Image 1 (cartoon, protein in one colour):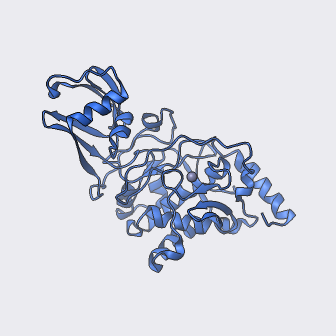
Image 2: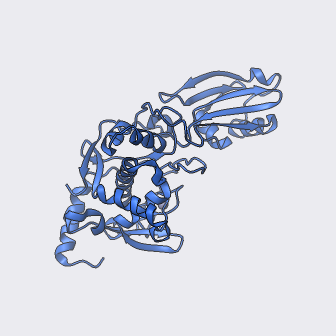
Length: 340
Ligand SMILES: [Zn+2]
């Protein structure tokens, strides 16, 4: 960290105050991808090894608050190894990888704030010993080198980051776990329904206008043999015999319209477990069983907790600004400058 003593002291003070705002290592990253990629399940938060350098060395806070993002240096684990870059360049690359610029300026600004909030949380609780974040979308956030992007797209992504310089989302004074995903299918999900722990700002909300998303609804066909094999792997006591139409019994739903659990062959299966076992796009699904096989019909794409990217695009098209979008998807949060 090449900083003057004064700058280092200022950074230390800033991070000491920021530490009060930061959550302990929470749910993983974004589950986001508006592009036709598989949905992402947050992975278990990695524990930080004791040999890890202090967070202040992975993410040096700015000495000049007027331009928070350009003053914040970040260690990013890329395919080419650890690269140090400022937060503005990192977030511009995240936007280019996570959201098409066609989603609109206010949606891009909402994504920039959500991604900045997520990044600063990771700076405090890094998953990697040598970097604050990585560029693997399944672990942290996707990233694309802005230098390789088409100039007009790069300019729009960069503008969204600059227009929201230093802005983050807080809940009761702490940085939130700003999860996001591609498409909810009409309603987002409670954090507790997916990850088991309640977060007051990650509650199910309506998310209209997503119908043009590539995977708003989808179908997955599975043979009876595959269906049986996967369920038996999940629970060896499951009894699947006789008429397949009678295999499915009671279904319980979550607040966000996902499957909390479904009883199949006399055993209860969690929607999240079925999503993982069958690679379903979301836990919001219905099942159709017949002698010909099983058809899952899914709504949405992703874990459906937090901000829907297609929903943000719809709200932007309807004339909402980025703050309205963020406060819609993250209940009870406030928008604030990170250094305050
Ligand atoms: Zn990572």
